[in-house]
Length: 106
Image (tube, rainbow, N blue to C red; front, side, top):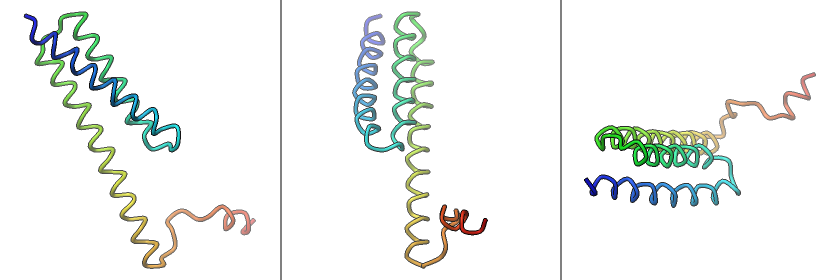
């Protein structure tokens, strides 16, 4: 059965390209690090599926859950950013006090 083997190598290549992109982005900011780790996990799943000739359904199931994890992380970051921008526009104090406020109280 050559088709699933070719698919897993194709998915491995895609995951490798994603990991390289997130590695490059993570050199400038910390937020892409979890995405890089999930891409590395996808590479490991693809390689294990190829080596152990795991059923294609199971590898697709795990890869789909990893992709869902990536989407949830990106959505969570977006919601955090939206809330933070709204607080800045309203002039409301931030939920976390600034370090100068913490040390001034002591």
